Image (cartoon, helix red, strand yellow):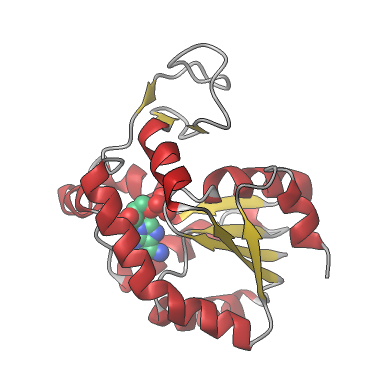
Amino acid sequence: MVYIITGGPATGKGTRSDILAKALDIAHISTGEILREVAKTNKDIKDKLSKGELISDEIITELLRERLSKDDCKKGFILDGYPRTLNQIYLLNDLLEELGRKIDKVIELTAPDELVFKRILERKSCEKCGKMYGIDFPSKVENVCDDCGGTLVVRTDDTKETLKARIDTYNKNSKEILDYYRNVGLLKTVDSSAHPEEIVKQATED
Ligand code: AMP
């Protein structure tokens, strides 16, 4: 099983991917999460992330190839945040062919701008395990991760200024990605103001 979840910043890709991954018992692969981990020891990537800039197709695809070779991806995976450019679509097609896999569905999440700003300026993630919390999913104890007890921190790229750059980047690149998957009959658009669990029904029905 291979699903792709796409959508602008804070359209709920992370939480929906988690829900879907648990329901289908497959891995949730967030390229943003992989890069935030790499950024802890790589200043160049750290700087790019904090400016809301995309990492090069070659670097991110290599990191993805490495991640998809792990055992937890054997049954299938959800890609959250990749592909983000037309070139990444072609690189992904090659990678999936190598792995002998095919995409089941590409889900585009949409959300009104006001909701995006509200979500993004209020969300936090666990600095230890990366679990995300936000207005729809607050932690039980303020600033403490429900799963591992780690401290919840605001992402360095979750600021009004960076958000604008990230929305612009998404809008610039998303059209050709959505058109591509629409043309091959894989695209399904889901309103992310719907109940988060709706994603399972939307992803698995024809
Ligand atoms: P996300 O967590 O998906 O919002 O991603 C956070 C940041 O990671 C983005 O603003 C980009 O700087 C970088 N990033 C994530 N995925 C990709 C990708 N597929 N290609 C290039 N850069 C990426």
